[in-house]
Image 1 (cartoon, rainbow, N blue to C red):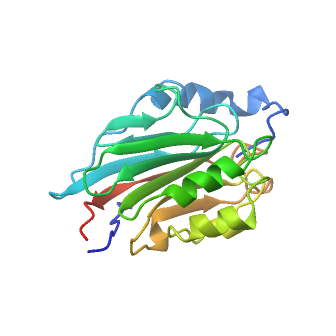
Image 2: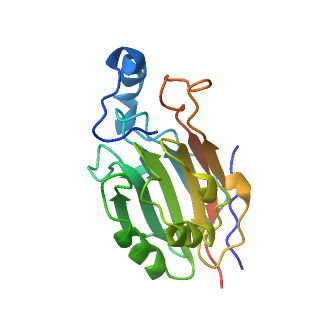
Amino acid sequence: MALTFPIAATSVSPNQQVNVTDVMGVYRALSSAARLCPNGMACPDNHFSFSIQSGAANVVAPKICLQNKMVLGTAVRNAGVGINVVILNGKTGELIKTGNFDMYAGDVNPLIELLKSIETGSVVMMASYDEPASKLTDEARKLIAELGSSKVQALGFRDNWVFVGGKGAAMDSGFEKYKKNDRASNKYEDWPEILELKGCIPRFME
């Protein structure tokens, strides 16, 4: 049985500072919330509840929660600039690995190595923070697309993005949100609005 995901349904270069006036309201609203997970969803038996929130400019880190427990974010000190990744065992819901990959000043190869190591039956969650795309190569984009992403090929400088996918899974583009960096429509001047995604993931059955 393939994975399906019924869902209830930024970046800036590291050496450039956010205009504090522009984002202070966002920071005040999110700084305490960044340490909390939203109320858990009522999911069917043999499903895992999850929520993902992208970063806000380069001020508030992203967070990823599973079963109302934070597995990536400020409170657990494992979120960082670029692309943040959480990998779960789709059969048990066990956390396999977390990581963040700097796509502005860092090296894409560790991300590629991680993507190649993902085993069948795994659930993969991703969230952008700061600049997610400058170092993202065609190979990395292809590997993420193979996990079910329909937006990664378009991901550009300072864009915001959240995604839930899996290996060996039947995916749906509804389990992904993407916001292009466009000063004319950005909520926070030079950065797109925060993106949120939440829902229920069924246990993987072969």
